[in-house]
Length: 346
Image 1 (cartoon, rainbow, N blue to C red):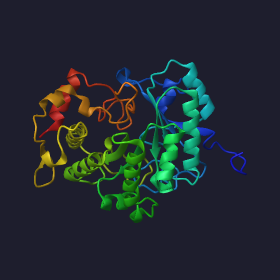
Image 2 (spheres, one colour; image 1 turned 30 degrees about the vertical axis):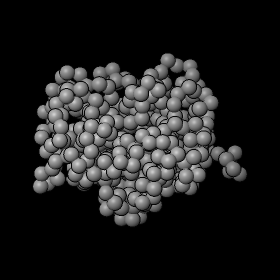
Image 3 (cartoon, rainbow, N blue to C red; image 1 turned 90 degrees about the vertical axis):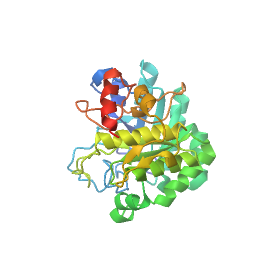
């Protein structure tokens, strides 16, 4: 029973989706990883028969997506499993996971179900837990505190768009969606108050028609508030309203990745970054060569494990294995660095 409703379908909190990468690591799906990449974060996504009520024009979960399209989210399929079966597999298997991330969708039951799932993960594993939250269905600091009380040590807020006008165009009023720019940034501040500075991540997507300066500006805003930035590259999901939009160039993405890293590491602020007349980055105010050589700036950006190193590495979430890496799920190797250096292209 879920309230007074008999569960005749596979819905949360009894059932969840997990990424294909996570399912492969648990032995629940067949597959292998190019270049022996490892999936270090078990992503659990809430699931409902009615789907997600949001209408984000780039998202594979959007209720406005073409129902005939192959179901994907962040490029890959997300199979549905019993939460107990997934946690049984975590307990039984030698896995690479360093963190669990429980992700909400836009659904009236999502808040309570997220708490239930976080509690169960906390009870049955010794892994740190993040919550990827949907502020639209949350009641401010009360619900934010409940997420922490349930057992999460970090949270993420998927603002996605770099500016208010782009947020409204792709997520809000322009697509008749429920999300609002102001509510999302209020939630970022609430999360920082509850979880502490730099225990909150702001998700941003490069490639939603923003300029490089606009993206750096919003990264700097998050940093000044006390939130880190988790960067994604736009990927055209089949059946979405943006299915025919081209991904940002690798050069564009590399420059933003480097800016994000330097700002999040406290090496520069947004005011140090220099631009040309098209708001394209042409300088960072410091010598960037050591940070290109190091390679960390070009890895996936996400929550860490208990060792302080990246856990949420989302292998091949932004690109097919046959294509150049956008987010490296491991430290780039010397040949990768040579390629990256040519792609930064200042």
